[in-house]
Length: 169
Image 1: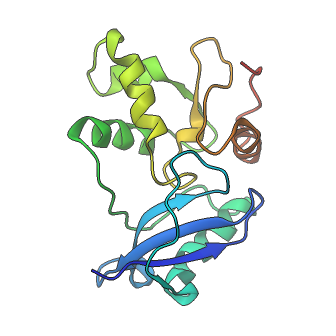
Image 2: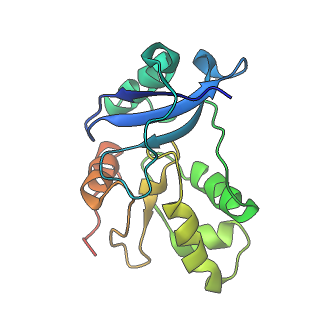
C-alpha cells in the first residue's frame, strides 16, 4: 500500500499530513494522520512526498485557519480499538466553537465515570489533530488540559473557533 506525505503551512507551524491514494476520498487521498512539530507520538514522514495529493486537505485547512470553514469534508482511515473509535466519533460530534469535558465524552459513548482516564487516553491517541477536534476537550473545572500538540496550540485553536481560552491547568 502506497503511503504519501507532505507538509502544509499553518498558524500552528508546519502540519505533517500522511495518507494513501483512494478513489472515494475528496481529492483522491484518504488521510491517516495530521501532526505538528514536537507532537507526542507523531509519525515520521514515510513513503512518497506528494504535495499535490493533499491539495484538497490543504484547501480545507487553509479555509479553516482563515475562519472561513467550520469543519472538514475529508475521508479518514485510522487504526484504533473499538473503544478509541467510539471516543473519536464522539469527538467528531463536538461542534465548532464548543468545548466538552472528558466526563461528558465518557457519558456520550455510554462509558462509566471510571472510564474518564481511558477516554483521555483515546483523545490523546487521536492521530488527526485539528481535523478531529481533540482541542475542544477541556478539564471538568474548565481548565486547559493535555493536548498532544501543546497547550499553546490548543489555545490558538480554541481562540480561532471563538471558544474562549479557559484558565490554564
